[in-house]
Length: 276
Image (spheres, rainbow, N blue to C red):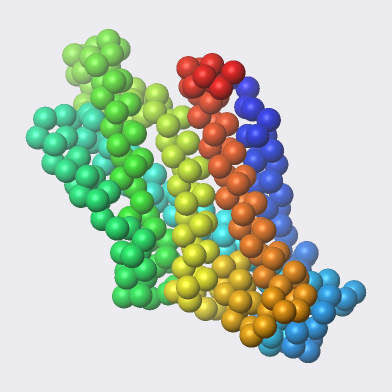
């Protein structure tokens, strides 16, 4: 494995900063994000550095606590997506034969579905809570990870040490978890980062459409409420209400993308030479 690239290190620094903000939110936020801490639509001041929204909530406090929502969705939905994809792809690649064909037809069927409309439909049916959002994202976006994992497992299972482990009586679970899973760990790690970025974008989009948890102070919900204000762009309010959460969403997705690219290049020497 090569040293992480500059963009990957930048992404890790940004993720670390967001993580610190999420952990220290009660200390960093000047107010409770649900408290009516000022008059509606106050401009930025010493008391409210980013002003207040249309009901008097402090925007900076909402922005800080919104970091928790985005990171929670990124970690939980990313982990769920990778877990399902690794299980399905690992079983297909290791078992081969009819099991492989059956599971890959399932993957093909899932990839042929229009996932964004289906995502909106399922959220509308199951409810707009944060757990439902995480569950639906995990259930709809695992096929890509499954295909990548399957290809790597198919390559690894034919290697000599895996065959010897089977000849010496190693069970299927033992061989998979002891000899195959460690070899595909870099692929799983890369899939986790990529899936986390997709999850952040999906959660923000759902919140913007009004399908997110209305009680969760997420960045997407902040943008939605800001854009609901008539004449927002005719005044300067967009710069301190809509722009900060939009920039945070963009920066978090960009950081996850940089980390994903960096980890892929670090674990794949051929790809690294291609970039040189």
